[in-house]
Image (tube, rainbow, N blue to C red):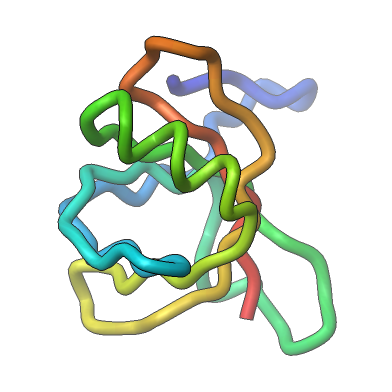
Length: 97
């Protein structure tokens, strides 16, 4: 899901397998986060990303709305699931501290 910014740069993309937790679920997903994780500040903005899991997990996460994603480096972030298409294995999120 790489893209180019208006200034011609391609933002940093962080990918890996992480542990997704939301109400009633804890399991491994494959994630992709657009932007530099080092730029996140408490109370500041968010980064966007997506994760892939089976369709039922993606749909349930979207219905739960909020959760936590532990990235491959061991750091845990809050996520708000902002999009999912029925039948798809991909859900989209905003990630913040």
